[in-house]
Amino acid sequence: MAKDKKSPRPKAETPKGFRDYFGTEVTERGDMLSKIAGVYHRYGFEALESSAVETVEALGKFLPDVDRPNEGVFAWQEAGDGPEAKPGDWLALRYDLTAPLARVYAQHRNDLPTPYRRFAMGPVWRNEKPGPGRFRQFYQCDADTVGTASPAADAEICAMLADCLEEVGIPRGDYLIRVNNRKVLNGVLEAMGVTDEGQAADVLRTIDKFDKVGEAGVRELLGKGRLDASGAYIDGVGLSEAQAEPVIAFLTSKGDSAAATLANLRAAVGGSAIGAEGVDELEQIADLLDAQGYAADRIVIDPSVVRGLGYYTGPVFEAELTFEILDEKGRKRQFGSVAGGGRYDDLVKRFTGQSVPATGVSIGVDRLLAALREKGRIGGDSHGPVVVTVMDRDRMGDYMTMVSEIRAAGIRAEVYLGNPKNFGNQLKYADKRNSPAAVIEGADEKARGVVQIKDLILGAQIAQNATLEEWKERPSQFEVPRGEMVAKLREILAGQG
Image (cartoon, rainbow, N blue to C red; front, top):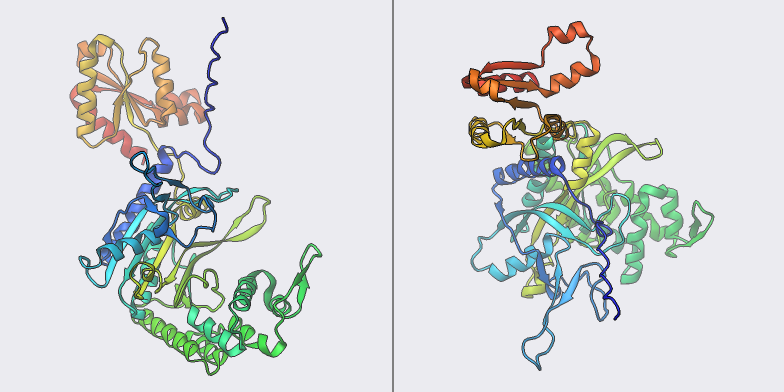
């Protein structure tokens, strides 16, 4: 009789493109989200926690025309009810926090105030090819205003974004929020005489390469084409030099002041009405920010902000960190963008058939955490709990009483719950937890009404650096009356900072 084959054991590995987050990372993220939420709340925004799962129909625009819409999102089809039931809806994990907002507003608009101001935080999922630093699950932190077309709403988002960056530890001078307007670019396209959607998309893609190839490269790509760094020839858009000139004027219009930049943009859009409307909106935003004290050292009008212009309908903004870091090859480079947003007046229209003005921002939490680590503002050693060691397993009640007293004093603490037979293993456990102190009460200490408290941080420092004489002068273990246990722990923890 053949033996049943055993099922292979599953591999203990994280799925490709995902990662696990442990204690300190989770705590740091929670602290950051709390600080950002505090700023959002101070500005009058209300929290919203929408479903992590949406119908594919609601997500809509990111899905390809294939039988199974699993490119870009993680999707599955619900089973139908009954033996002859048709398959159910396609569902998907949300890929951002904006598409769910559009659905929520359309669904509950009669019960929500207008304008509706909400913030949302949480993980999103994208079924994309993972790469270094690029994961399929990551956190976003959004704030949006739905239901007003006023440029004051856009100015407020920019001001709030600046406050958020400073609140989490990015000082003034280490960031810059740059503002542009899709309407200005529409005016430039109109001034160029570009009306074909395909050609307009080609122009947009070319403009997006300005940071990489510069003015000369954009001129070549708008015309016949150019050789790239590898020697391959890239076909151009095929515009004449005269047609390309408004694009160059647009990209190089940043002046020494907001007024100079706006004047250059007016020249770039020529007689375009939509372009002039966009410049007017930028001027209002600049004036409103100036009235609140947000000068050009924090927020600036910058026509080179082109990322995402195909999605937005009006003002766009991007927060860029300006300090330098070293890349994996040791080369200096700027850290780059950590947040972006803008006005998207057509998103809710998919549900209601009516255009609803909206503007918002999304902060990339993981990138911002990475920036703070680069600056040394987070990521240091984090202390674990005080460990109450167990010298006699029959006296577990005594040790639980001690740990309860310590916790009641607001100090993080735990009783060692492993095998207490080897005391050395208990201290090794405390070291692995990076515990600041250990409390010891054996039979002798119990009889005399005292406890031993070991300063594990100081003890480690002494072991590494001190001579025997210095070690004797700086004891790292203290005997105190049982009633003074909490007070001595407070003193030790205060000394550790």
